[in-house]
Amino acid sequence: MCGIVGYIGQQQAAPILLQGLSKLEYRGYDSAGISVRNGEEETVIVKSKGRLKVLAEKTNDGLAVKGNCGIGHTRWATHGEPSEQNAHPHASEDSSVVAVHNGIIENYQEIKEKLEKKGYVFYSETDTEVAVNLIDYYYKKHDGDPLDAIAKAMMRIRGSYALAIMFRDYPGEIFAARKDSPMIIGINNSDVFIASDVPAILKYTRNVYYIGNMEIARLTCGNVTFYNIDKEEIEKELTEIKWDEEAAEKGGFEHYMMKEIHEQPKAVRDTLNSMIKNGSISLSDAGLSDEELEKISHIYIVACGSAYHVGVTLQYVIEDMARVPVSVDLASEFRYRQPIMEKDGLVIIISQSGETADSLAALREAKEKGVKTLGIVNVVGSSIAREADRVIYTLAGPEIAVATTKAYSAQLAAGYVLAVQLAKVRGKINEEKYTEMIEELLMLPDKIAKTLEDKERIQWFASKFSNAKDVFFVGRGLDYAIGLEGSLKMKEISYIHSEAYAAGELKHGTISLIEDGILVIGILTQQELYEKMISNLVEVKSRGAYLMGLTVYGNYGIEDTVDFSVYVPKTSKYFASSVAIIPLQLMGYYLSVSKGLDVDKPRNLAKSVTVE
Ligand code: G6P
Image 1 (cartoon, rainbow, N blue to C red):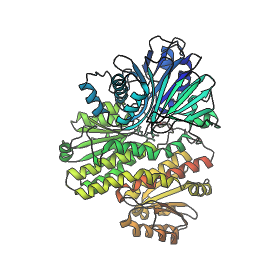
Image 2: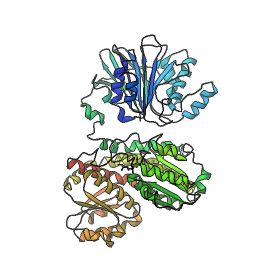
Image 3: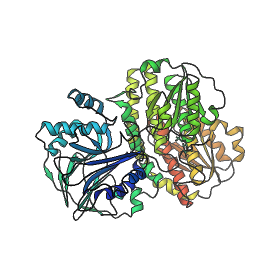
Image 4: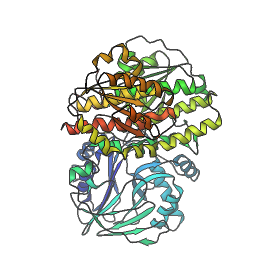
């Protein structure tokens, strides 16, 4: 996820681009850049690593760069670490094409190799530079027609993109193209804008065009023309944006957390698509070969917070499916307990930020002991990503709300893919089961989206419990792992004390805490443990608990036992956490909202804990 902007008109472009980018920093903030054209003069490109303010200082808030036409970008690295070199805009070899890009070009490696054979040389590690040179290639091959070159490149590229492009031979024009990545075109008299998202241009206009998939726009001062992929002109309706600025930044949601909850189908889909190609798993981007996976004698998962809960889930999944022994540790414990690690073991560090101090220390500890390490990380180029021997990136994009949702879901997805591949290379599942697991995985995004449709019921239920003092989550097996995360979501943002218990442990203490009206949330996605769970729920009910049951569609008999039931779509038993967590995230969210709390920034908590 990155942010792009563009401007053409009668004003100076650079300050407008910087202002627009400042509203898109939520989409990425590891580096930024602008490219501005002053009439016939050569395009000037200024880029910098770090937050946008570094670029603002470098350009004197844009005043140092002259010209009425330009494009800008704020980056969230997906290919290539955050650096000035990898920052956008990118230029073709002789600078005849300059562009910014948001999205992921899946076949960039293949295109890059083809272009290299034709003599193209690349200076960055980005997929964007590949797209720019591909456009340049078609532009030069076919009579210098920008529209034609872009359309040909679009046919060749697989993946998602929003591109804003300038051609040296066409001063005073910007081209835009998109597929599956957001982009809008705004207009106000002679000023024309491009942006990934509404907040970037709200200061200047509320009149926008939505550019459709596989469409191209040609912008000149005061005018936009749209084309389909066959270069035929198409008509578009102007839409008036009615949101205020703050609402627009959150995509119309009241809080970032809610926005991120809704981004989960995409986060999971993008992560799965980066690891599953043409129906089979490829971990080559992470540098993990089948031989390596075959040899692993023990997996040690180490993480903090929600990432630790992903580890607990993966322990169940990997041990059951791939029959590899797995231990899970909190990083703060692992680093000081002198863990015994087998030399053919693999230490997996799971971290959204890649900067959590304890997780980083645990990684270093493992490396010092000579054990191979794998990071499952969301932030490209972060410390854990750099220091781990191997990295699998989750493609959740930047997460702003302190309480993680979409990064957690993307971590689960990445872990599942790893589990399936481990099971396959170690002969624990046959070809048929392997295909079935992959199909199940690819259905998860839609099932998550379907679960989100039921949010009003959760909202209603949460409103009844905003005064609760204690809430208990109970489950067995994987449902216990989901409970841990559901409980954390609830306590961290609603400040209601909550605990998750393995349901079989209730009798060993917790049951004495059950009083009349205490909310107990039972999670029952694991069919073979269903009956046992029902017995546990009956036990707490007879002590006065108010019961919510979370299970899969079909288990309607649960209504005989619980007071309120929530159903989620059926999945493979291994992947149930991904759908069952959704109502629990919503529950925490709505409780926090109904108590009037600061959902996105809960007291005393930080998004990334970089101190011990
Ligand atoms: C903080 C965040 C949690 C996160 C944990 C680990 O406590 O609030 O949401 O799970 O850190 O962070 P990491 O960046 O390593 O995943």
